[in-house]
Length: 268
Image (cartoon, rainbow, N blue to C red; front, side, top):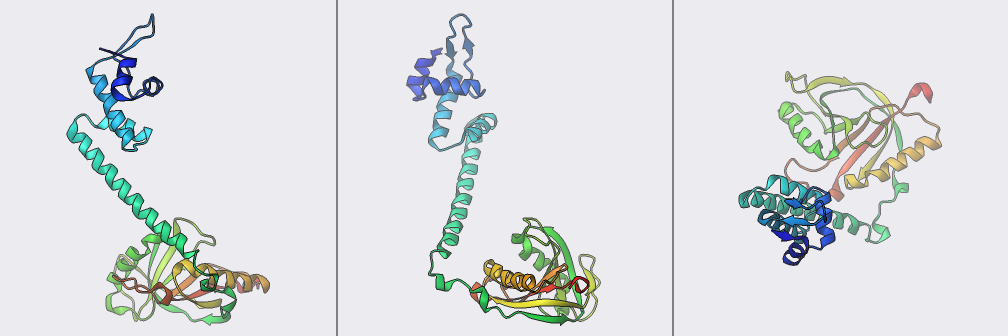
């Protein structure tokens, strides 16, 4: 059996840390003398203390250490946990790299930032169109997968550019969307709906550039709507006149998106 100061000396964990792990039910001494308060650790306790010391060295959080102590009963179990930790770190590295790229975009000269004043705004009558549609509620990064599903159903019947109808007035992480493709004739496929998008009067503009910079076009449209005391109705539409392919994304700066915001004629 080992006293707390001996375990501290062997592992390099302070007595304060050992008491904390005791309080957190992570490393309880096998024997506790109620009269003098001495904590006594056996060989198994010492091995657990050494494992905690290793996990701390590997930058495991307290919650991760607790979890590891619960699931790792032997070296094989520990190997699985360490592999999961590596995968978690690799995902974080990828995420941080993307964040670095995103930050880098804002370090570029101001002149490279799209100018919302250059958008040409028009009011148009959008004719009705027969579409194959797929109504979804999902995150924006899943649009590509749903688009592939839609085109698998449409096959060679497509008769125009892919568009997305947004039923939310504001930005939401899980968006209410309807992916649509104009079609030559109705398609018998249970995975999609064939419908007519109705004629509407709408305020429109065209955005050239990445989807991340679409906000500049929306700002220009909303400025125009607000200045002219117009009222909008939903869903709004984004028509992807030129965008990424199903496999290769291409140059985002060359994407062309038509934004259509239907007007509420009754209130305008």
